[in-house]
Image 1 (cartoon, helix red, strand yellow):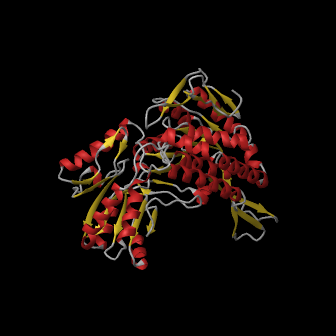
Image 2 (cartoon, helix red, strand yellow):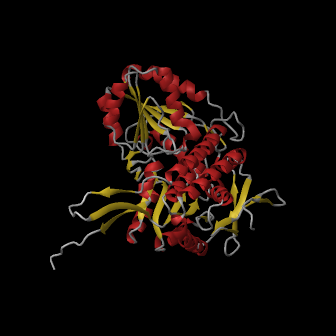
Image 3 (cartoon, helix red, strand yellow):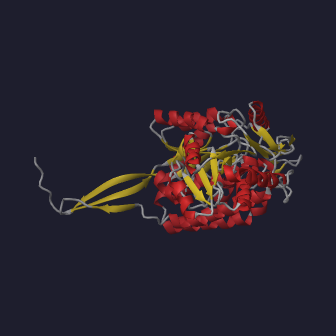
Length: 495
């Protein structure tokens, strides 16, 4: 297949190919697998089930293309990014539909993902002019010294199914803007929206062959594909978005061959609500933070720490907000809470709630499900050592806990090993800033949700939430700093 446009099979299933070296091709052995909807298990697409051989070809194509891409004039790169932004914008309806069918994204989140990605591409069109170095002071009178940023080479991006489109574009655009070429290994749960669509848009925009390559694999095939990325010396950086557990494997394997890693991981994100907060605003903000995309975003709030004097009033408002959220088919524009991604996610969420209740927690609302659509769930009196009080549960579940004062809230937040996103809700902005400065987190927000992202922001975590930053700051993650000197005179040497 030479076109980037998927074809409809006689059964109505969309059949995709993958892009390697600018060409659209099947897996080397012709194998495919079917992607199904998390809502109703209908077949969404048929994509290549590739092997290590395919990934080796993709890495070779990326390595061959990288010098020419790095040398391309900024104006030419800028034009390509702007063209890609326009093409993606034109395909908004198609991408929104694909996100609903493949990853269960509701219309609100799907539209956000597309517009965010368009904005990222437009901003990146300016990043290609980002100053890639500086003049350095030197004690030698006839010497010019510079520190110059040079691209790493080939970046391998592991892209996830949750926030599939945003996180895939994020894992591609900054490396490209820095002069690298990219190989994308999307999750088998969302190979189209987390990979193939990105390849299609960039291909159609005119990015040179080999600049971006996308290789898909069947469930169970990730380990074989990843081996090539770990061991191939042409790959100089692994950009992984996913769980801390898998990231430890990626980091260890990368260390063996001294590859750089950028790890964007999960978070047990928390909110502190002070006694002077606007409780209506706080409840809406907390509900959005906890339940948006059915709790499957790394920045979702998992626990809300509320001053004891307003604990009962806040909790009642949060329960009302949770019960008001429309549930069902993500293709319905009215739906806010769609399905969890698969049965494993459903069973894990159910088990975490059941475990907390067995330990004495009270279920105020939710806890039930229809198919994979899990009701927004609020629990109180959850023991601090229960999994819901310390571990990320990728579902629409939140714990509410009273605190005596700001100090207790800060202590509880910082005791957790994760540190991705934090919010404090208060009418005293100065107090909110003072609390935020004491929090160990990659992002802190005063009176805004834990889910808070813009393309240019330095998104990333601390502790078990990873290392490295995206956005404009990502340029530094995907470049090496090289010291260069030029002597204009004759230096006197001691030999």
